[in-house]
Image (cartoon, rainbow, N blue to C red; front, side, top):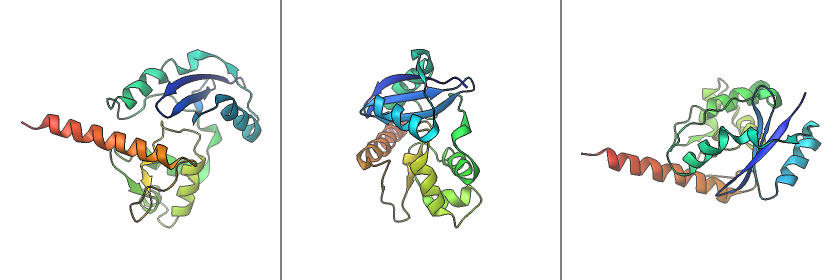
Length: 175
């Protein structure tokens, strides 16, 4: 199987997107794209070749998202790196509305396994689809944000970005 990758800058760093012929298999935010690609190579034995065409659809969507204009990413995903309950959990995460959050337990219930909150946490931590699958919207039961791949400041930034955009939209919608 042939894999390709492209990069695009964003307010959090560099987005590294890896794709197969079916769609994106990984989207990661990194300070060092080489490190992100090395981790993929090590974990999944994937050695993608550079191809900036990989981010042709993703780059404008990322720009719109960080501008507060995009609510849901519309890019094809190749789920080959995600299986079982992790896939069910991440599919449920995609149902959390823009600008809102849900607890790990709520996501577990949405995925049909109400007691699997820890498994939801693992799925969110290990997601290959940063940003595109909004795991930053999943919070602790007490409402605290928690971690985000070791970058809690990124999670705070994303949650606040969405809440601010939702608030601006609501204020603009008032007569």
